[in-house]
Length: 115
Image (cartoon, rainbow, N blue to C red):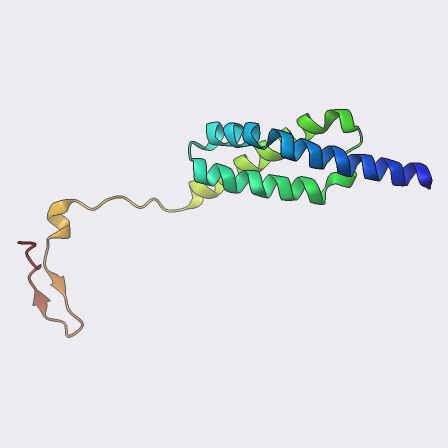
């Protein structure tokens, strides 16, 4: 029982130390994968939370870097899949943006000039 408690404490310490020491590297890797710094930071945060919740599954504290990197890559891949399912929003053609619009009454109004 004491040995199990020591193992749990050492995995907690190993995960915590690795997260603090490698957070910048994790953001760089996620940014490389996702090509978006803000989304990468969100994914690193999600991966860190998952790693902390799953820290008991870490069998070898010496492998904590590889273990966390795999979690991070999987989180990034999940994000890429989510992005692929989202509809893309594109900028409107300026000519279309100036087209007449319908008011709630159903009548058509001319666009306001920006002079």
